[in-house]
Length: 289
Image 1 (cartoon, one colour):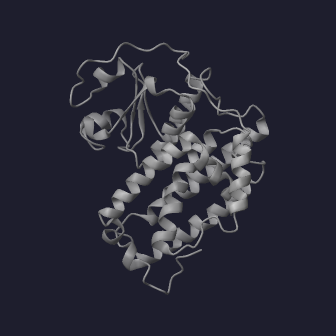
Image 2 (cartoon, one colour; image 1 turned 60 degrees about the horizontal axis):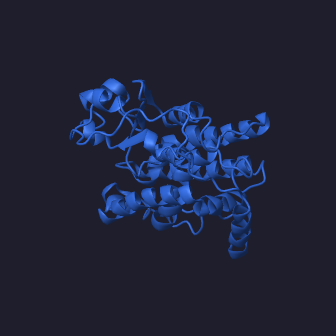
C-alpha cells in the first residue's frame, strides 16, 4: 500500500494545479449585508448569492461543496444550515423543497433546486467558464463518469443508512450491508475503465465529487463498527483513486468536514443508540467483507 501511495503522490504531483481565480463569469451579486437576520429567508438571501442548504456531515451535500471548492466559487455561494429557516420540515423549507431533504440550492435568481446531482450539474453549467470544467469532453469518458455516479446514486445512497441509522431489523441491516459490498465491486469495475488517478483519468470530474463523500463514510464506519479490515481490499483501482482524492486539497477539505461530523456522532454514541453495536453481535449474519 505504501508503494501505491507513493505512485499516486507522484502522479498527482505531475498534474496541473487549479489556481484560485476571482474572474467569475457572473459578477458578484451585491455587497454583503452588515448584519444578516438570524433566520435567513428566501427573499433576503436570494438577492445576494446562491444559497446551498446543507450541513458538513452530509455526503450528498458534500458533493456540491466539493465542486464549489474546486471551481473557487465560495464568493458566489452561501452554505447555510437548514435550521436557519426552521429545519427540513419547516413550512419555509418545504415551500422550497417539498421532499424535506437536503441539499437544496436556491439560486440567486430564485430557482429552488433539490437533489445533489441536479445541483452539481447546474453549478458546472452555470459556471462553465470558471475553474476546471469537471465534465470530460470525450463522450465515452463522460459516460463512464455518469455510470459510476449512477451506480452510487441508485444502488448505494438509498441503503447507506444501514451503516448508521436505526432502528432497523438485523436481517435488513445485514442484507443491505452485503449489497453495499457488492456495489463497491461494481464501482471498482467502472473506475477501472480509465487509468487514474481520478474516475475520468488525469482530471477530476463530477463523478469524483459524487463518490468521494460517501467513501469517507464507508472508510470510517465499516472498519470501526462492522469489522472490515480494509474497505479497499481487492479493489486496487478504487484504492488508487481514494489516495488521490485524499491528496487533493479540496478533497482533503471535504474529508475533514465529513470526518468531523462522523466523529461527533461517535462521541454522542450514535452507533449504540441506533442499534448497530448490538446488531453486529449476531454472528448468524455476515458483517465484514
